[in-house]
Image (cartoon, rainbow, N blue to C red; front, side, top):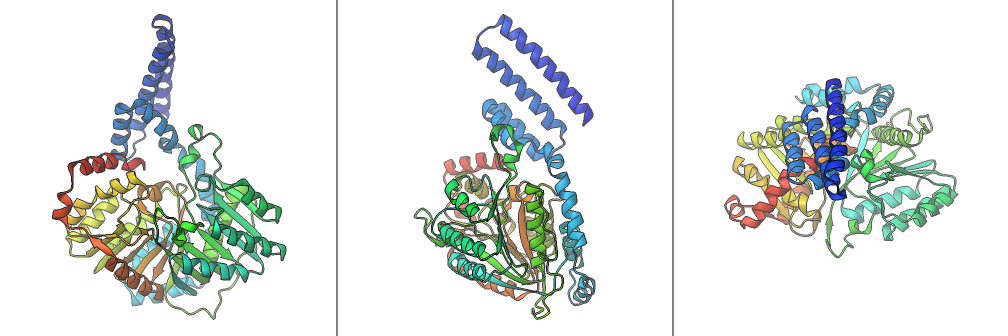
Length: 504
């Protein structure tokens, strides 16, 4: 890498000399800018080539920079400088790892040993524990929450019961109907002496009004923006967003899943109408892992640590029924192993009967895409559930470009037609599942901060299976012959969108 930097410096020196020469002999601002842009693109291309990224990403960036120099240059400044990722989040990764290991569940080893004897999934368990840095709890209850009405009803009910603290972490927060309802409850609880901390993503919630934030702050609630970006073009943090949706109440009850805070999740957006989504209610020991994820994110943004007995339940609630294993795993650009993606990969390759996936955005990397195709070719029932209508058109068309290969391998693809499908989960053999904030796309795997609940032989998996079947009945299945007959214009759009998929 040092040789790369020296070479880049050498090229930069040549660039400066060339610009001075061009300015003297060629004259004109336009020519001056053109030469500067051209040489900047050359330097960036040189750096990308020697960063040893995945070949697909390397080729994509070189094509974009070559075909659209100005667009490619701006896009690279916004989204391409991943070489700073390790340095930017290294301290957070080390601190998170130390904290998660320190607050482990002392009784888990024996539970796992007994569970291993009953089920033969040693590799998945071992991988999840090693990469996730959080252990599997067998003293946790989970309940599947379907769509906005059921989810918000449960959230509002639990918020009203808070006695000690409320922690919220969201990607999108809107100052609309449900946003104001939650705000009023938080203010009332703060006035009752409950400590409320609210972490919201600066980019995802960029439309959140200052008045909304100030009203909460005036009530004594700590409102903190994750990854604030003052000058997007000069700040590579713009590309690394906190996509997590977490609520922790008194360290005993938690929520995680696909819903942000906004009226559209209640089906009140006229553009999308009915909004299909899935969330998870959690009670018991695994809430501590969810709490640790929040507290570490809070510490990263504020340097304030609250890892104390008051915020971490010291002993599991023994009255919680033992209904299988629950593990909370945080993924993000601070983890070099792409933890959630690699566990997904392990789940897919271990499948014996079926792999059922629901995701609003399907842009897999080559590892996941190959795993799905091989599973389908092996006779595993591979199903993909995606929305029929788009909310992000480039992503929508890029997703569809992957369909023909999957269908040819024997997978089945369904488009949900009764509204917008935003659920994010994967079920393997009806025995292991994951539900959370991570989409089945490269952005969730490599760039966003995500959190997923991994479920092992719990009752909630049975509920997920039932809901998936219901969703399939509300969908249109894609036929390979009909899909291959689509208009050439759509194919062109899909292929172009797929070319950009490593950057999305």
